[in-house]
Image 1 (cartoon, rainbow, N blue to C red):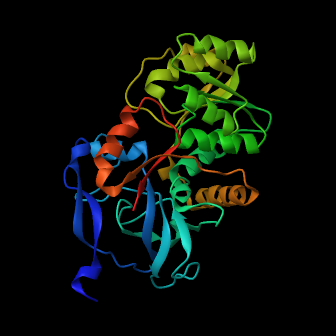
Image 2 (cartoon, helix red, strand yellow):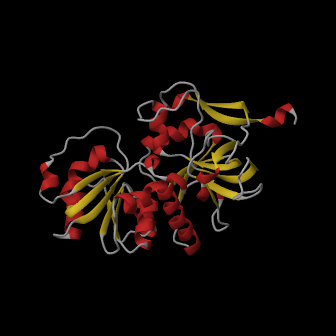
Image 3 (tube, rainbow, N blue to C red):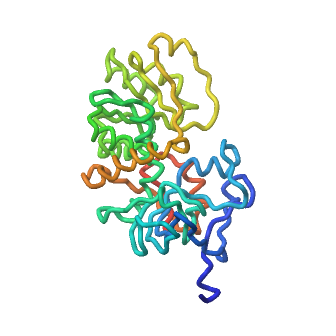
Amino acid sequence: MTATRNVMRAVRVFEFGGPEVLKLQSDVLIPDPKENQVLIKVHACGVNPVETYIRSGNYARKPALPYTPGSDVAGVIEGVGEHVTAFKKGDRVFTIGTISGGYADYAVAAANRVFPLSDKLDFRQGAAIGIPYFTAYRALFQKGRAKAGERVLVHGASGGVGIATCQIARACGLKVLGTAGTEEGMNMVLRSGAHQAFNHREANYIDKIKEYTGMEGVDIIIEMLSNVNLATDLQLLSYAGRVMVVGSRGPIEINPRDTMSKESSIIGVSLFLATEEERHECATALLDGIEAGWLKPVVGSEYPLEKVVTAHEDIIHSSGARGKMVLLL
């Protein structure tokens, strides 16, 4: 192998901090897949809000420095390690986790975190499945115990997890309400399966949701921004309703009495804590959804790897989410 062929471009983080700590390097060694691992030629990689929290150093999990961010890659198998029988060189795949980091030309992943990518979806859509769809399924069913016929409010429904939640909930027979911050976002939420959309930038949008749901309230709220919405979420719940905390960017003050009056629950959701069986359950449901045609990731902003700093700025400060943000390689 010539010296030029065993190196790749990869984003490296040498210290925790703002987006500027993301450094694109072009001389990073291509990793080798070990036992039960695969090497993937990355075509696209999803950008998730959690990656900005980890990068800042303000997250429960801190990777050892230096590291390459990125979990959700889509691409083609380049090589397989020992004992890997499920995949071969040339297979189209997507992941829900990597070992070496996804913001790179090549990534190593554990074979049990890799799934076949249907020809129905392109690589950009493949990079939009991982964390968003697995998180949405876990929040709705494994933690939220959602049942057909229940009402779900997706708070921040136009981002990656929000769109995934709308599609899954609609396909599984729930009544779906979603919020977004722009007209375009609201239309996207409706196209993704919501029965009704609300603009969370309108001063009286909570009243509109209450009016729409009448006395019944909503059974489940999938909450992307708990530090802003949790207190009002508790006002919107039905009896025995539950708020699923999927995202939060800081503390909030709530009145615990609001949970007593309806015996409601606030439940945290972390995909990182899913067991092997739970991940398998998610994967089975989602792969079925791709085949059935209802699982259709919506890709939003696209960035070349060179613009990774801008991507990390935009995912936190954009005026309103419009689908899943991806890096293209």
